[in-house]
Amino acid sequence: MSNKKISIRFFDDREVRAIWDDKNAKWWFSVLDIISVLRDQDDYTKTRNYWKYLKAKLKKENSQLVSATTQLKLTAADGKQYKSDMLDYDGIIALGKEFPSKKANRFIQWFTHSDKSIDGKSKTKAYALFESSFIDNLEVGTSKGLQQIHAYLFGGLYDFAGQIRHKNIAKGGFQFALALFLEKTLKQIDAMPETTFDEIVDKYVEMNIAHPFMDGNGRSTRIWLDLILKKHLKKCIDWSKISKK
Image 1 (cartoon, rainbow, N blue to C red):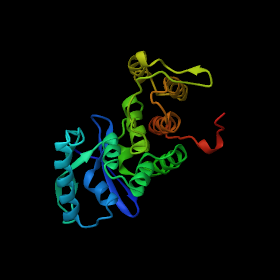
Image 2: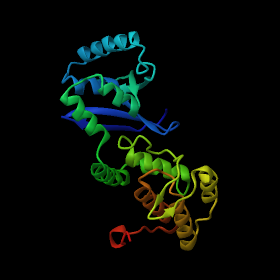
Image 3: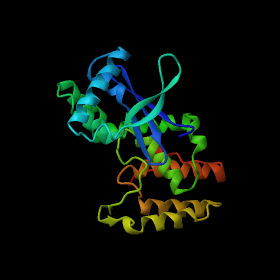
């Protein structure tokens, strides 16, 4: 997982680190960071020892949680990188339930977010994306590039961040592209030309009809369009002047 993208969020002033898995299109979260949060523990050794104890306990109970972990390198206090146990979104929710307390419940609510906070958080991430070097590594004008954008905006907010949907969706009576044919549809959109303004708009319209994600399509696709316009025409859109209607 070279050139890995790391996200750092804070709960009660304690960091929760995550690493993006481009191959599987999901985030992996640091188990030790979560345990530190749930136990109000700043001592790394005590946190690590508690995780050893909890892993042994879960193994005896034949819990799937331990086998769901993977190891990825994170930077330690000494500045060096060491392999650390990580869990995905579902794994972290399951881990939180091993700590029956008001704080654990509050953490799970924070981790999963409400719809309103998702909108605010993703908007903040959208601004951060344009200020980061990660934007220079995005594929422009492809469905993969759109997945990368969606994953960046909604990683840690939606468990399906960056993942093409497998269910049919509709809005206001309009049926978006059928999931059964979505892969083929996206390949056709990828092949569409994007050298003139009209071609770019046509491509954007088709991607909007495809609506490849369960949610978060609008913001992701607008950024995707801006990157195409910037690349080929050296222009972008002031979305604040355009009505959503």
